[in-house]
Structures are given as C-alpha cells and as structure tokens.
Image (cartoon, rainbow, N blue to C red):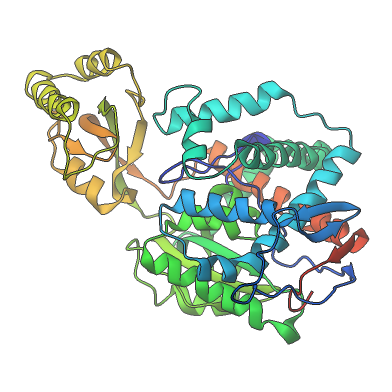
Length: 455
C-alpha cells in the first residue's frame, strides 16, 4: 500500500476512478457470533423476484439490504468496463456481502469514535475523481446514473474510506511519524541486501473464515481470475474485492524480497513472466487465497532505467467515439490535433495548447519511469525525440498528444528517504488495520439472512 502520511489514496479506474475501502487483512482471525437462516434461493420460473429492500444481513442491529449489494455489483461492472452477466453477479454476491459487512463494522467504529466526515471532504474527493478522468465538474452523478448506480453508493464508500484513514491515524498515535533514525536504519538494512532479487508484485487476497469449508471462497477466486483473463484491470478488481490493506493502492505490494513472502508465493513468482499482465492461479496462504501478478523484477542495487519528463495536449470529444458514426466535431478534433502536432515544437508550447483546450487533462503529468510504463506507452515515448509531438492517439473520449521534454538515466533500486518512509508507514498501517479488523469482528453480532459457506 502507498499511503503517504496517512492521506487518502485513490485508485484510477478505466471507466471511472472509484476509490474503495479495503476490508479485512490477511491473517485476521474472525469469530462471528452469527445466526444464519435458510439460504435465499434464486426465484424459480414464475416466482416473484426478491424485493430490493430484502435484508440479507444485520450487523450490530444495522441492516444490509439486497439493494446495497446490487448497487455494489453495478459499481464493479461500471469500473471494470466489462459486461457482467447475471451468472457472474450471482457468483460475486457472497463476497460482496462479506465485504459490505466489513464496511458496516468500520462505519460503526468511525461513528463510535465521533469522527465527522465533513461534506467538503466528500465533495473534494468527488471533484478529484472527475478531474482524474477528464470529466467536467459536477457531471459524475449523471455518469453514474446512466449505468444505474446511485451517487449515494459512491459517497458511502468515500465516507468509509476517509473515516477509516482517520481511525488508523488514531490507532497509530505517535507511531504515525517516521523518524530520521528509522529511515537510516532501513537504509543500512537495504545496503546489506545488495545483490538479492526483489519483486514488484500486486495481489488480490480472498479471506477464508473456515479453512475446512473454503469451497465458496475458492470458487470466487477462480471467478476473479476468469474476469482478469477477459481483460478486467488488475488494480480495479483488487480495489473492489481484495481483502488486504493493499487494496487501497490497487493491490500493489511495492518491491518485496523473497523472505517477505510466503514460500508458496515465492515458488510462483520465480516462474512468472514480468510485466505482461500474467495472473497466477489461486495460491493457498495463511488466512485465504492469493492471486498475484508480477510487475517487475530487479537485483537490489542494480536497476538502471530512464525517467521521462513529458507534456500532453488533450483534445476532447463532445460525445463518446463510435467508429461507425464519427461526428463532425470528432473530425474537427482530429484535424486540430494534427495541426497542433505539426506546429508545436517545445514543451511550453504544449502547455499553452493544452490550456487552450481547457486543460481537461494535466499538461504536466510529471516524470514517469519509462521502463515501467505499459508497452504501448513505451513504444510511443522510447524513440520520440525531445521537443517533437507524438502522433495523435485516439481514445473513446478524445485525442492525446505527448512530447518528451527530457530523458534522464536513473538507478531505480536507490530508494529516496520519502519512499523508505512510505514503506515503513505502510507496514505500521497494515499491522494496525489487521489488529483492529480482528477486534471488530470478534466483538460483532452478525445475523446473516443468506447462507455463506464457512460463516
């Protein structure tokens, strides 16, 4: 997880950047005092469908309804950009219920500590989502409504996420500050590790409450893998469904060494190809199942790469692109992009051109690690001379132009003090979250109105 100074971390999604809250941690031992009634079955042909206000669980006297669960499923469909069938949603439903129970417990803890989430914080988070996706201010509600998702569903997630960060800050207390001595100690430890192999890994963790009855969780894990193979973005699925604290950062574990991983995970990552989106089969680890993808591999002390400082111009479409029915505005946008590419020869000119287009995407995305970009972006930037605009790159929402301002060589294995501070803080946050999640579940009274295996 990347959680600099315990500030809110957001995950940028393909269709929509929807930050969600992680739920329980890897080793959290949960002991629900649960009374489960008979499983709710899908209605037979001709039977009445389940009402939206049907209660599927009661968590410390707070109900969780079928409408809540269905809206979360729609949010998953919207964020992945993939078609979601009724069969898939039926397979996802038990896990959605588990996660929403965890969120209810977190919400109750936030309220018990009298933590107030100001409307301005929610508004700022929504404005940030719109900005990250190049959406005009105030249009997110309509964007969600078009896909049948209530804005309240997103607001509830934001409120839990923001409040949970404040809970963890309280739990850490003085430990929320990383001292210069802590950083120096970790730097010395890293120096001793030079020559060893490190892996940059992302994970999706599926918690198993009862290892004797893990069939349902294994089936869910295999369903997630199927969707990843179909093209669902790993960070989005991790943010939606992983039950590790790393879900706050799209499943990213950062750079880890073999002795920091479960031996069964080490056996897999040693064999996995790097950076092509390969996804593991379910890996059995203490507390549940793990899905991993290997983003990078390096030898400590030796990873030479390049940082590129770029500028961009984005020419937006008025309506989403349909290649079979190109509008006059979209044709004009392409002609404008071609003209900008031909007449713009410096980074300040690129910034000016993007301002003229309303700066719907940032003119300066910042320095980017070339070798860690996706293959398509690498192919565009690797051979692009400094000061020359790229060819127009057409997407559903508009046309992008890029320009390289400078390219510098860097040893990526040298971690800055701020990166080390982030890693130390992440470890402390993970430990605090694991303990608190375990405590909340141990104290909870949870009445399940549907049958979840192992619960």
